[in-house]
Amino acid sequence: MNKARVGIIMGSDSDLNVMQAAADILTEFGIEYHMTVVSAHRTPERMYDYASTAQANGLKVIIAGAGGAAHLPGMVASISNLPVIGVPIKSSNSIDGWDSILSILQMPNGIPVATVALNGAKNAGLLAAKILATCDETLQKKLLDYKEDLKNQVLEKAKKVESKH
Image 1: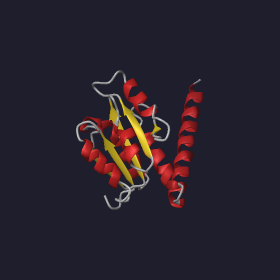
Image 2: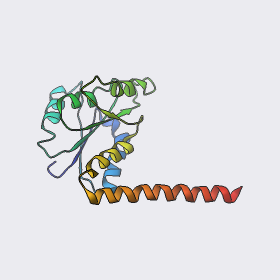
Image 3: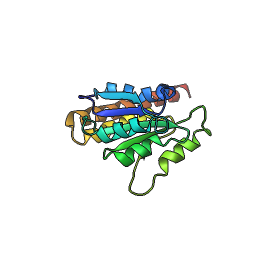
Image 4: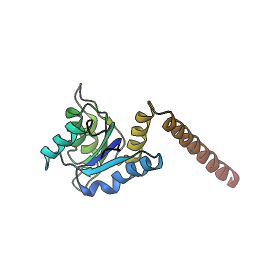
């Protein structure tokens, strides 16, 4: 984990299909990450160890995905001083994802967790990149280029739609 700047954790390997989007966008920006499974409920000691040593291990941001009760992001934020981005995941035991969303979103004062949309791991990766870019001009330029590309994609789509009508 030495070179990783972002930690990506999830409560179960069944969350990998969602959390992979965070890894993919970080890779696109050249940001090294470390990904693993850490369950707040089934491996609380592992969660505590991960959160309490994350900064010493070189991490700058943690992305934590969880479904159902979704305690992982909040518990990690309560232990670590690093920014934590929570990704609510619609899991097999979920109530249409609302349980996960509210568990991550409704943190008590003093323990903030940035929260993205349901299954929004790509945006979690982008937010982690933006946090890192506050101290990295090269990364800031890549993010500006990325936004410009998004804009150009929309303009191209607009031209196609307009040419058909």
